[in-house]
Length: 83
Image 1 (tube, rainbow, N blue to C red):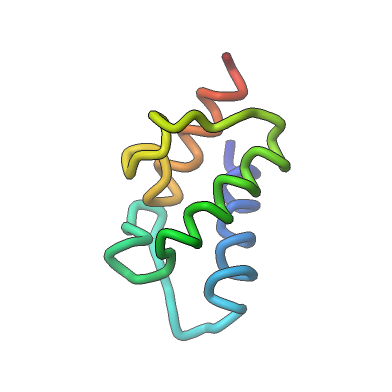
Image 2 (image 1 turned 180 degrees about the horizontal axis):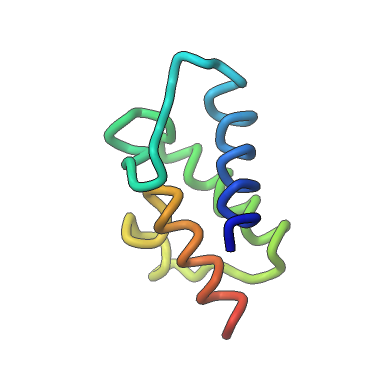
């Protein structure tokens, strides 16, 4: 779902990097390691996922394997939409 990944990248750039061209990140880069998202940012991201894609993120799903990179987010959204 390239469109989902592109939309998520745009959301992160617009809301957390504020359009800055200084912070570049690859699809597999950790948002935490690059200091793109902090704990509050992850909560905002989760809210965005729920509102945009129409599913609930359970507490046990709030783990780096699901949320800490574009690749992880894209795969997580695909799994949730397929369920």
